[in-house]
Image (cartoon, rainbow, N blue to C red; front, side):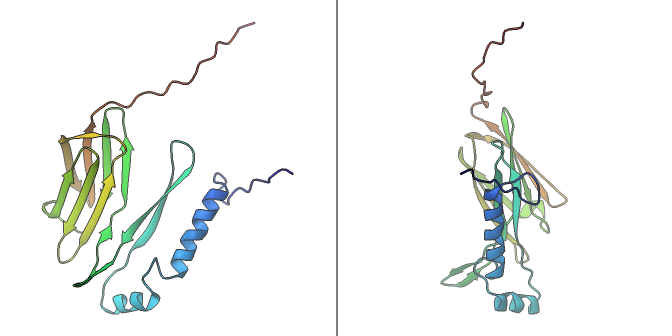
Length: 178
């Protein structure tokens, strides 16, 4: 018996994408990952915003990559600590990593960055905005080479890789010309 492959309405994703979309819809119907609808209504009455979303891209292997971003409230002994997780993209180049993060509503002086050879931490802690993201980097970097700029709510960080990315060379096959 042949398994029939179902293609999503988007035309280029398969069953795996459909399962991820169903999981996201279930999260939303349960109140956005742990915050119930009553809490959302209370936040709206107090004039507080709530952001929760997903970014879907296609990875180098052709499979969908789903990343979550937005409010990530955590309960501590002192109460609820509300930090927003910014939407972040990592662009791998041969000799560099470029990280782009959306941090609207802050000034560049409010942004605190800390890098190790494996990790990048982005923090903003102002009375109006709180952002936090800890990134495990896909390649080892030289933290001392970090360069960051912030404009129109977009933070761009460039980091040199310790070793340049190796070009993948497939096993070649000689082709006879007839």
